[in-house]
Length: 237
Image (cartoon, rainbow, N blue to C red):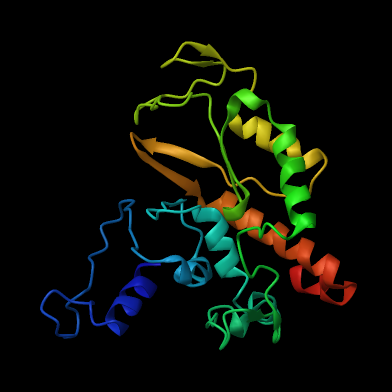
């Protein structure tokens, strides 16, 4: 992972402190101890990241639904074709058209909002919303494809360092029959879907576990392969 990260940084001209690429300049001595490496990137680099290994955490620092946009962006890459052979494992270049993937077919995700004149999607969104108790719905924005759930009320702000016990809200003294994540997972009994859970790492900072993110992606690709035809099922073996 370190070698691939350094190679990527050198390609963009940020591989050395002085801007020169002298031999051995960026070598990191092997100490035999476990070390942590951080790779700053945007969502377009997720395929590169997973071709190099499974990160312990992915920490999104972006002002929108990170998992939704990462997934939408990921499905614009020819991942299914890349799975056909090991030689293409690390060659996940972006397709020429952002809406194309899967050997030139349109990406299964082209937009993340619902148009008011689309009654089918509006009905789908309303059905999802109806599953949750009204007292945990903090905001409903179908035009953006977003439903916000929280035990906090209007005007209340949860502290960054809340430990988040599963049975009660310590900040406002409310009982929680279920956590928001548990409510979301209950949807899976009736609607195909996946939960990308953010784990609190420190006050104000949450991260997606790399292993969980990867497993969700694999299941989503398999699901898409099944609905697109049995001819694709071999790509996931």
